[in-house]
Image (cartoon, rainbow, N blue to C red):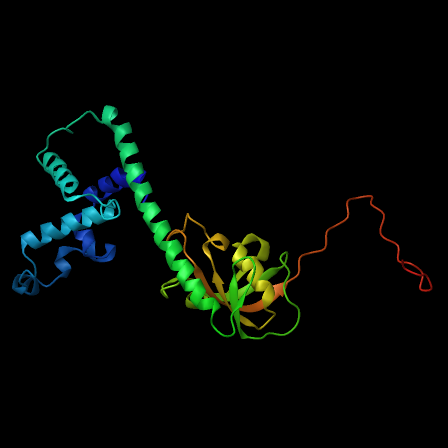
Amino acid sequence: MKLNRIFATFAVVASTPLVSLAQTPAQATLPAATAPAAAAASAAPKFTEDQLLETFGWFVGKRIGITELKFSPEQTALIVRGLQVAASGKDAPYKLEEIGPEMDKFLQAKQQQYMDVLKKEGLESSVKFLAEVKAKAGVTSLPSGLAYEILQPGTGDFPKATDTVKVHYTGTLIDGTVFDSSVQRNEPSEFALDQVVPGWTEGLQKINKGGKIKLYVPPQLAYGDEGRPGIPPASTLVFEVELLELKPAAAPVPPPGAAAPVAPPANATVK
């Protein structure tokens, strides 16, 4: 979660009806009369009020990213004190227009610390994982750092970097977590091969139509230090890809008025 959204997120959480934490919107809007009165009366509470309040506090903390910010016990106690001040209906301890800029700097620094830890962990895991992968039989390593193995050979032409490909694929983190899959969506995807991450541009040129390939894409050929939703910074990504179709790039259209090339006579010598 971006830290500059923390307070906006907190406001949303605080204004969310409590029923939405446990019910779907459809359930939440059902008229009370639709539930049998006898069943409602006989249903004993499953949790105590203390348990509900404790869980609500956990929910708020998770939504504002308190885990990722790695606050010390003393810092957490101060946050709780601020919550108690807000719960009492009192004004903020300090003028928000004055303390706000300093708070932004503080939270941005905390976020940067967290990101640095993720990058370090991602790089260490990637180095270890790729070393193990590249030692496996059947895996080819390229100078760029990309590694791949052919799962099923295809037939026909191989795509060029300027071609468009239609594929089925599943992308996972090195721990096996799926972050994207056209297979799960049951809908093939189509990409211009020069408009995707470099690991795909290079790797898909190693397989032809009908073929399947497994790509081991290091961070510098994927999303680097930034990551993406569901993809931590400095992640090595693993893709299983089936090339269904390839569409060669259209030949460039000559500008208006340009002379068409003339083929040499059949008996001419081409130098």
